Image (tube, rainbow, N blue to C red; front, side):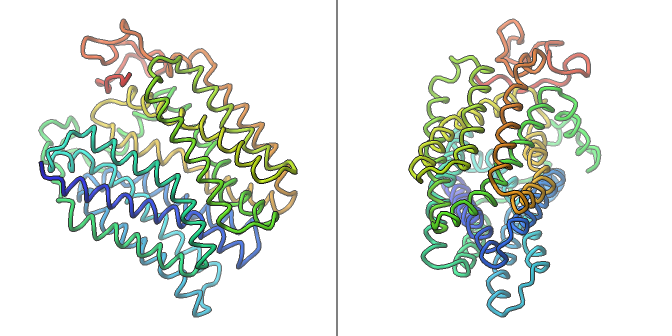
Length: 438
């Protein structure tokens, strides 16, 4: 075994995830302190996430052509330079709001492909090191979850102790470090080496892009899952980037409180994920999915409308985080079960992009509404939307697409049998799909 490629990939992801978590706290707080406008906070978030989603949506075929490591190295470096520009221009009194939007746009355009590239490098790093791919995926998944838990707490403490300008300098250093580690420790993969096994060998960019789009949007359950996540992501991003900082600031707390609340939710989400991994295969998938949506959404939003102490908010957000821990494992398995084998990479990348594309439109609108009518009405309306979304999987056709396949619905190799595709309105089942994962 040659552990260097795996260690390099895990280290690069750790640095990059820590950088994005630091930006998640520092950027909204910087905008709030310099402009005092929730609407501006929403616009900044929308620009970053919109660029992130578009770049990730369109970048899959490009990564296949020039290599995932190459994209990851250069994208992380561009993100570092854009983040470095924020404190430098602010210190020189040259950072107007339009210039900030340009820098944020560059951050979004670079971090989207950078994250997708690192995820796509998992099988290459596993092969180069002689490590089972499941073990590498488990390590990178653990890094992502831990960064979601520890990252916001550490980031909030850094912003509170050092200020936003040093935080941006550290952020740039973390992204540059991720680029260098990826360059020095992870070997270059060879795109196209297995074209003889690729049913799309010789296809151009647009054709490959269209194939990935058809695999996702032509499948009714996947289409509904994308729509559900799109709506809930708009709400969640608005709460994290706009409403929660405003609520914390109005209560006389500092940015470390934003990170602490997010960290509590992340920690309980790890507990929920661990329990789901242990007993999730024995639980009814649809019922767990609906229950998790109910626990995760409305209570966490409504508690911010009440005059309650901070510890009450922490308890409610902790319970909501535990429920959210069950969502991603279910969604990942459903997506993998329904995607044709040869477009799993593009399909996963497109699902990630589609579920974020609503943020550029929704977050500024909700941010402006917070400025006009206050946070409480927006939170109540968002909680009602969450309750409505939780009822969608109850629909018969969607329930059939999310439900765990029964043995008679699969061929001997564990893949869905020919014609056994109850959620697809495009006729009989298409190319072979990924076997069910429990």
